[in-house]
Amino acid sequence: MPGAPGRRARLRRELVTEALTSARRLLDEHGPDGVTMQAVAKDVGIAAPGLYRYFDGRPGLLHATHQDVVDELLAFVEGARVRQPADDPDAQCHAVVHALFHWCLAHRNEYDLLMSGRLRISGTGETPPDDVRHAPLMALDRVGAVFAPMAVAWWLAGCRVVPDEEILPALLPHLRVARDLMRAIPGFPRDVPLGLLHAMNLCSARLWGLLTLTVYGHLGDVDGPGAAAHVEALVHDLVVDLLAIFGQEVSDDVVLVRDAVVPRS
Image (cartoon, rainbow, N blue to C red):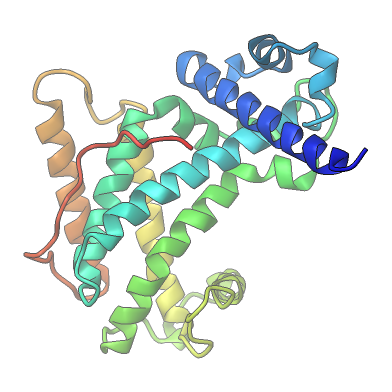
């Protein structure tokens, strides 16, 4: 029938979108353990075996959900970044870190899916594909790439980084791999020193470490009275620390976004 392939593709896209919307709701309400093929299939009104036509089992469903979560997170932090002056990487860094904390605290089950390593475990005893098994690490790479233009701007402006010869030899292979990955980002210079990647790694460790401790409640109550001021203080101190690694200071022109509700398409 004329137009049949196009109609099938459209119906497939619609069902995948509906299934991901269901998975996100289940994730928000019940955490990663609540996202199952049976629950999503029931939600969208099809038999569970039919869902296997669209996802490679539960690992594939979780992987697709993970990607959807990362896309939403990136859209939110990018929205915070573009509100800052284009020539002020200090303000951009502050805004992105601030937005990252607020989004993750408002989406703790989503953060759990991103960072807990659950996608590395297959409930059936089978070994999931590499792209599923290592999905949590992809969030770090993709979100970390948001900071790359800021680091490059500081380097081009003359900020000091550790000379390559002063970096511990055991760190050099990893830094070279990281630099190769960063070179895939449009506009990322090929001649950046490994010291710049070393500084970015230090920032990443401090950022994700404090964020994880905060989200999982290891640094005090983040919901009770006074919690908002506590989180703001944690973020401000972290930003001061991160900027100092590159010899920068907090910008007076930063515009902070505190609404972590992102419309879903």
